[in-house]
Length: 103
Image (cartoon, rainbow, N blue to C red; front, side):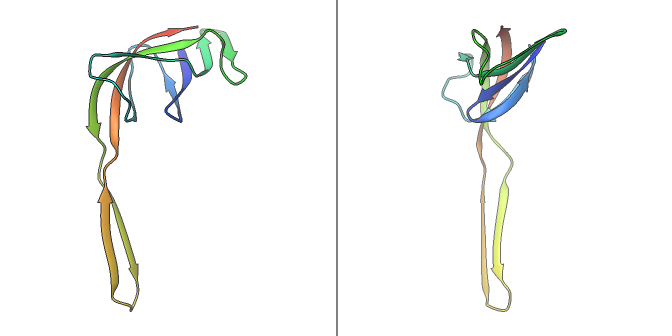
């Protein structure tokens, strides 16, 4: 069984007991979250596709941890003009463990 869920603007394929990484969500580690924007549910041979969401379907997940993603480096320059700018940032992420898919 798997589902495709809209979590914080990103469509993610999830399976039971899987670990997924999504943009930062509110919630403490150990807290359970529920997502109801399920786009598709596949249970064996049965596939349910929503218009846009599957009615009555939801996903429950437990917050495992909050962490920062890899550093992204931004470098700008203009040749022969002595212009160089170097910046970087790291996105805040949340790791979730899928506990159940209700369809």
